[in-house]
Image 1 (cartoon, helix red, strand yellow):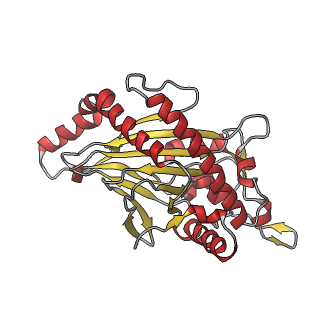
Image 2 (cartoon, rainbow, N blue to C red):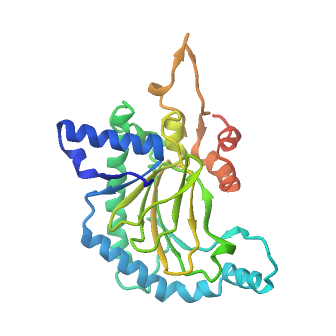
Image 3 (cartoon, rainbow, N blue to C red):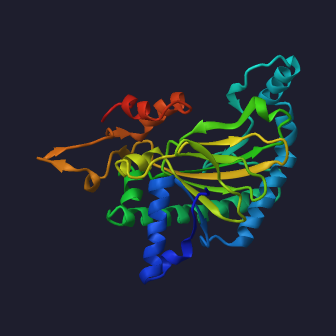
Amino acid sequence: MAIPVIDFSKVNGTGEERARTMAQIANGCEEWGFFQLMNHGIPEELLEKVKKVCSEYFKLEREEIFKNSAVANTLKALAEKNSGVQKLENVDWEDVITLLDDNEWPSKTPGFKETMTEYRAELKKLAEKVMEVMDENLSLPKGSIKKAFDDGEGQNAFFGTKVSHYPPCPHPELVNGLRAHTDAGGVILLFQDDAVGGLQILKDGQWIDVQPMKNTIVINTGDQIEVLSNGRYKSTWHRVLATPDGNRRSIASFYNPSLKATIAPAPELVEKDNEEINQTYPKFLFGDYMSVYAEQKFLPKEPRFQSVRAV
């Protein structure tokens, strides 16, 4: 079993071919929560530059720091005890930085800022195209999801990029690359390593590998898309395994609501029985949800929706 791989260029076509592609994306959202896009419109040349600058950045600016990090030292101490000890459950074997429009970026790696600025602009456009496809598949007016993510007071949706590396792990049986979780936000676009695997999703009770493929973009739906779609699209549990070989590169971009955005199921998707609204999910401010998520990220998802304060 493998997650769907979809030729996104066919969305620009007509007739049966376009309808088939739209149906494939709907299936990816409804049955998987994850799918891979090929022919997504981001130039290959840019993707190759992104790989290059991110790998160089890790070697130049992060590799030595990670070797002496708390997680590396904790794992080493645990392995030396060698007494059938439990796995480290509260940390991840991950080196990570987040790129925003207004935070400090790495400055020692030639071309990093220029390349990643261009990449982020392309990814943001792709995210908005993917959301428009979701609008259409859910029979919502064009732009509905994007509009829901803005707060209506001039604060636009949040767009952040997480550059992660999962270096070779000397004791992968004792630590997770990244613990199992669902993503809190909206639409996530992942440019993953095309050689070193490790990403898995939970599907029908089984962990399934997200197969590395050259220059595809992996899309997954976060908790807020689950709410907006009134449960038609589910956010999916996923994790990264630590591996003994290879340094896994993972560049995930998150198109999330503004913290002040009010999130609720789209009115068009809520059944009305005798004028009473049957609503599975509460209405809440995304910022309030993030406060709950910060404490419960690796815990079951459903209680988060119940814990968040209804608006």
